[in-house]
Length: 465
Image 1 (cartoon, helix red, strand yellow):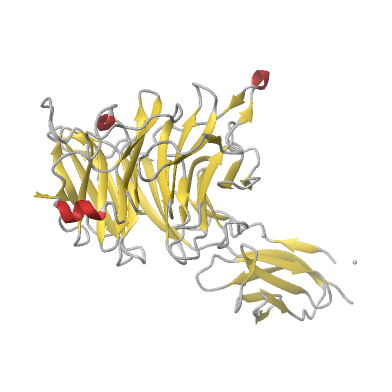
Image 2 (cartoon, rainbow, N blue to C red):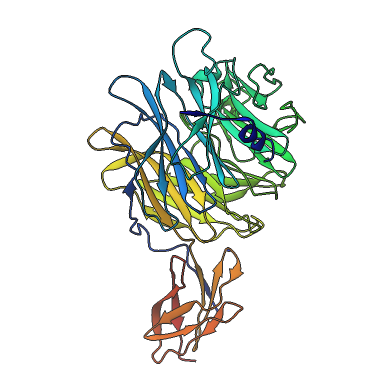
């Protein structure tokens, strides 16, 4: 395997008498075409994955496997923009240990960051957080000469990496506390001053960087975020608790749920700030918070458990946010508007047919989202499954002799959506509105559809006058 030279190293631094009826979502349990990512049952139940989309819109999914000789390989599976799964290929092979990877796209290059050690020899220069680069879509990878971060159990923890204009920022769990490392020199001191907890995630938005972690037992409990100096990795402000990430337990103590083997769902909305998705301490309510906003969005409630919360930001200037979670064996999804101030209808997808989801990752495109689920199959093996979903429409129906309708996407009107009821159909205008004449009074179900959306339905009453 080749080495990562100086030019590639430099790239790390450049880098929603009349009655309104609103459809709550789409058809519950909608079919989802899940496809295996070729992990062949070699994945562990606690193994994290990394995702990134290349300049050709191919989604790359990185995962580790334990080979028959007891050593570990870091693999990546390409998925075309339309969802076709291609054959997996190696990033590095024959390592003594490999932990959860992070993939980052930068221009035409794709970086793979992962914790581990190449050998068990004392002083192995690759013990820590390592990086490899590909410029040919993952056909070949060049490994850096040494780890970019070391010490503080770096080679034994799932790290998170983000690229800022000043260089790489790496964060992991080091003996209970969160540390951040700046740059690609393993001898650079790891920065402290962050809180206790696990599930570290780090992100860069414009000239700002943020690190997140979750504390459920050490206290104070909750999901926390803290600003990071992108030029040094040092703390750039006090830690803030993410609203909605706790529930009041016995004695009024705040309780938080910190799932094992996952990262805090922290995403950068391109250069428009940060967003965090969380579940409360009782796992009954899902929240989403635009960091700095006065209040979070309440995205789901009820008595069912919500787990495996994930988030992603759409590419380009729109920067809408997708949030997903697992509930009653199904995957639930919601997408926001461009400012992440309003969320659309909930889309419900059936989970994989022969297993349970133990991890969920999202990666957004302009018009849809890719889902990667870590699944424990009924056979006992663990594998990665992939599917895609469009956002859900919201249909608002107004009763009357001539019922009227409005079709929305996260509060915004949808032009050219088709509304059908009682054998009649018509398209919405630019305001998302349409009115239909129903020949016979009664109660009906109206349905709205549009290209690249999951349809919605609503009950409506057609009156005599």
